[in-house]
Length: 501
Ligand code: GLN
Image (tube, rainbow, N blue to C red; front, side, top):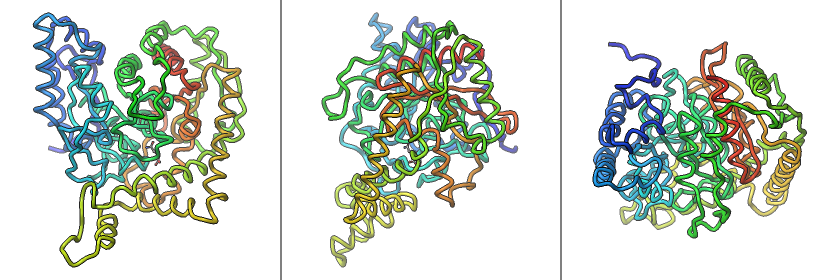
C-alpha cells in the first residue's frame, strides 16, 4: 500500500477525538462525558499511526502521559474541580524545554539521550495544570533554521504535503497539530519559529511579548530574543494554553512582573467577528509584491479585504528600519549563540567524544563539539564569534544593536496610530525538502516578515488564512501587537477566524 502524501487532521467527527478542539475536549472531560485517558490514548494511537511518516515527535512519553491522564480522571471522579481549564487535554512539547521524565535533545546530537535534572517552569506549569505531555517534538538544532531540516534526527514532514517542510524551527509541534497527533503544542519563537510553521501548516501560533513566558529550563538559543509560546488549531485553544504557561517567574531575570493580558476573554470577545473601531496598520516596507509568491500575495489582499468587511480600518504605517531587520537579526542571534552554546563542551552536558586517555581536555572538547554540532550551528557560532571579536564588535554587533533600537522605535510610533499591524507570515507556502537547506541566505530571507517583531520584543500571531490558489497549500495572516498588548492579537485573530467561517 502506498503512503498518502497528505496526512492532515480530517473533518471533525464525534467518534474521533483527534479532530476535536482542546476547548471542546476540556469541556467534555470536565463534565465526565469522556475521560482524559481515552482522549490521550486516541492521540497516542494517532502518533503511532502517523509519526513514522511525519517525524514530528523525537520521543513519545506514552506511560507518563497515560499516568497524568488517569490522575486527572481520578481527581474529577472524586469530585475535585479541574486544576485548569485545560486539565486532561494532552499536549506536544518542543524538545527545547527540559523534562525530568524524558530526554531533552534540542534536535542536536550533542544532547543525544540527555536527561535534565530539573523541569522547565513551562513543564512544571503544564504538569500543575493537569495537561498530559505526549512527548517531545522535533526542531531545527538548537532552534536555528526555518525548515526543521537542521535536526540531527531527520526532518519533520509537512502533513499537507509530505515532500515539503513544515517550516521551522518548531516544525515538529506544528506538524503534530496539523496531523491530529496533538490538540495543543508548545513552541519557541526567537525569530519566527512558532508563527512560521503555524502559517505553513494551517495552525495558530503565538509569539507572546518578551518576558511573558518563563525562559527557565528553556535551553538558550539567543537569550534576548527567545520566547516560548502556545500553538493549537483554534485561536481560543491557543489563548487557553497561553494563560496556563504565562506569568512571572523569579527564576528568569527577564520575566515580566505585569499581570498576564486577558487573552481568553479577548478571544471570546473576538468570536463575535465585529472589528468596528479597530485600526489595522499595513507596513509600507512590507509591501513587497516581488518578494511574495503570487498566490500568497493574492491571499493576503483578500485577508485585508476581509478585515475591512468586518469593520476594521486599514492605515498605512511607515517603519523604515524594518528593511534592515534580517541583517541585524543574523548578527545579534549568532553573537548570542556563540556565547550560549559555549557550555556544550562535552564536559558538563551531553556527548563526550574521544576521551580515551590519549587526548588533552582541549582536544576532547574540540572533538565533542565538532562531532556533536551540525553545520548550521557551527556556521552561527563562527559568524557570532567573528561579529563579537575585537575590531569588529563596533562595526557589526553594536551597529546591529542600534538597528534593533530603531526597529523598536518604528513599532512604538506605529502603535501610536494603530491597534495592531497585519502582514504576511512567509513569502511563500511550504517549500520542498532539500530546496533551501544548502543555501543559508535563501533560508534566512524566508524570515523576512517574522524577524522585526522579535528584535523589538513585541507580540505576534499567525492565524490560518486558507490555501493559496497557486499551490493549494496553507498560508497565515500575521498580526502584531505592542508589548503587553497580547490580548489585541487574540481579539483580532478570533474575529478573523470567525469571519472566515
Ligand atoms: N529562522 C530563525 C533562525 O533560524 C528561527 C529562529 C527561532 O525562532 N528559533 O534563526
